Length: 124
Image 1 (tube, rainbow, N blue to C red):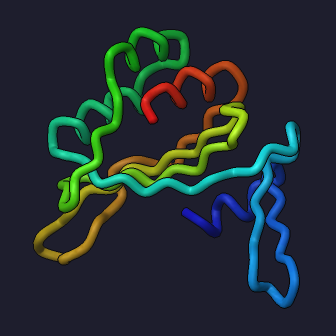
Image 2: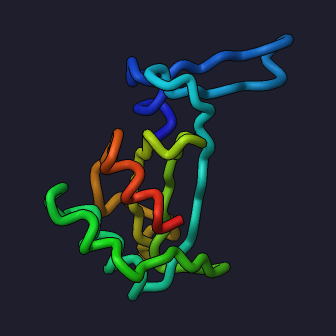
């Protein structure tokens, strides 16, 4: 996911003093982007996948009464990049595959901006 985010022209990656620190910003607003990784139960992962597949017109209703509840060893894992002003969210959902001993993608990387990002940011 990281390489896809870095190649997005809406994102600016700035390395500072000898590359010891990296700041990621959402260019249109200049807001700092934070990375989140949350492991989810099977039920929460399936619900989040449905939300991610929801048409943008119905996003408000889809996220209603849903909050991410992280657990230590979840069946699903969400990787997300969220701007601090809630105007940008990029999400990628993965599911644990016991045969591979690893998490494998079950969704594409989905990017939300503007009002949609503010709505989807409510789940965090």
